[in-house]
Amino acid sequence: MSLVAVGTVAFDDIETPAGRAEKIVGGACTYISLAASYFMTPVRIVSVVGDDFPAEMLEYLKKRGVDLEGLQIKAGEKSFFWAGKYYRDLNTRDTLDTQLNVLATFDPVLPATYRNPDYLMLGNLTPQVQMRVLEQLKRRPKLVALDTMNFWMNSALNDLLAVLKKVDVLTINDEEARQLSGENSLVKAAKIIHEMGPKYLIIKKGEHGALLFHRGEIFFAPALPLADVTDPTGAGDTFAGGFMGWMAKTGDLSFGNMKRAVIYGSAMASFCVEQFGIERMKGLTPAMIQKRVQQFADLVHFQI
Amino acid sequence: MSLVAVGTVAFDDIETPAGRAEKIVGGACTYISLAASYFMTPVRIVSVVGDDFPAEMLEYLKKRGVDLEGLQIKAGEKSFFWAGKYYRDLNTRDTLDTQLNVLATFDPVLPATYRNPDYLMLGNLTPQVQMRVLEQLKRRPKLVALDTMNFWMNSALNDLLAVLKKVDVLTINDEEARQLSGENSLVKAAKIIHEMGPKYLIIKKGEHGALLFHRGEIFFAPALPLADVTDPTGAGDTFAGGFMGWMAKTGDLSFGNMKRAVIYGSAMASFCVEQFGIERMKGLTPAMIQKRVQQFADLVHFQI
Image (cartoon, rainbow over all chains, first blue to last red; front, side, top):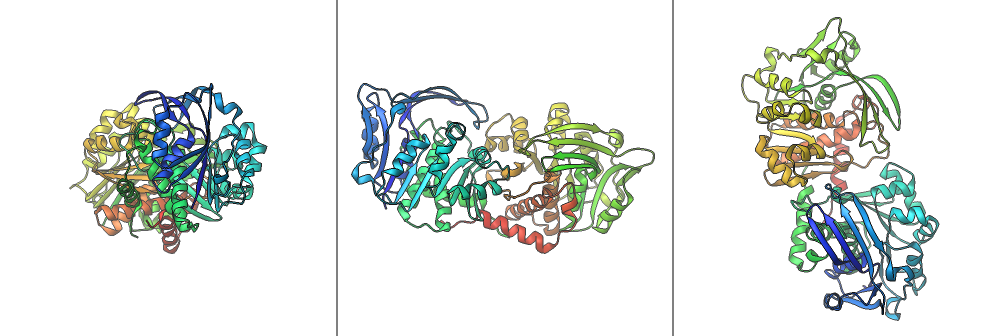
């Protein structure tokens, strides 16, 4: 099964209670593609960077099976940059700086080999750019997932609603689900969001786990309680990458398999937060991932 | 197995986004004993009310198998009263009024039949009163659980630490676990709290579920996503009552059975929040409880 992922490839300055990291590689598409690459390759990415982006990082992504044909490299321009600081609880953060740079004029262009994907992950970007990607497809993929955030609900709601009509899976956090639906109960919010288009809704709650809703069915995946959380940046994108990587690897759209995909996504995210940026995502093995998935199973296991 | 529960029996004024309820029966011990009574009777309570407390409510508790011998009824005095208002997210609330009344001078006296319990639930009260109860026991119970809150950590920490040395299970919320331990990571917090005395730590996270820690082992129980949450008051006490009721019914202190107890406690709490006060706790049946426990099992079930 083929997988295309769209999103930012960028630099981040990050401050957390555990320390600081300056100008490290980040971006939604970086996390998505790295996580997915542990399940299937190639992961075809659609993104844009400036010529300040390190060649060795591009080489590393290639080595991991990430197809860079859809990555635009803009000569004389700078990559997207974000700086943020997390509070003690790691659930809230302040954005200290955002420099759009190449992202300001990003027009995603899908190479010919990208236009017929079975699985499509639309990472968090303007809804207009997400729509531009959908418009270039030759046929509807088996599964389209979209990640977004409150910023687009506030500034581009109509565009967001238009693109939501065309996706199968929406991934947002609990506050965003409440904002988008106008309902405080997540059960009621899910029903309203299903009506907007996505048959599947994944509500990401960070350290409180994730909920998968599908027309009356609910699955809850816990987060693994960790002794040390270094940097939550990219956890949601890593979750999405693990989720879509598993779906594309298996090609099984049953609810039972989607539950497994949520667990694999959660396991990948639990690795991601253990070190700054993408560091922890570099040296994983299938055995390490399988062991962690087993920890998720043990964590919630009981017999009535 | 015998069970003694200590805590308030009181009146509450409650305002939530779903509505208002005035001068309804509440109090930690009311919720604990009602929840526990679905698993075993008698539930022997230690508490105090004024003569303003409705006789028909006492009759109802008796009918449910609650032993009121340890309930002091103070002539000419008023029952403890609390008024609170919940915010839209139901996770935060303001206390609008607290009238200690009979609670100001409460000296718990255990009748002779209460002094040898197998299971003891010390509901949220001043740590001094909790200690007074422990001092009247003839021997150490099989299991002592204690509920407390940030208020006592701020105002009576030394007394709290003294009583913690004598309990097996501590139930607090995540912020309280962080405050008590000084650790942000709940995994690290649990280790520190184990050192304070409780071999078992239950961290209640409301709509985000509950964690049970026991010397390196961790169990996570989700909260059931509900379409309508009317009133969260008493959910934590109802959880504790279901938990201890199950433990006292089964008399099995294994970790596997304690996990089940956490699920039964969570199931009882999921009923409690569906209506104001104790209303929902009145008409339950074993079949309804069993069905809900099955929903908890289904909610987290996946196959790797």
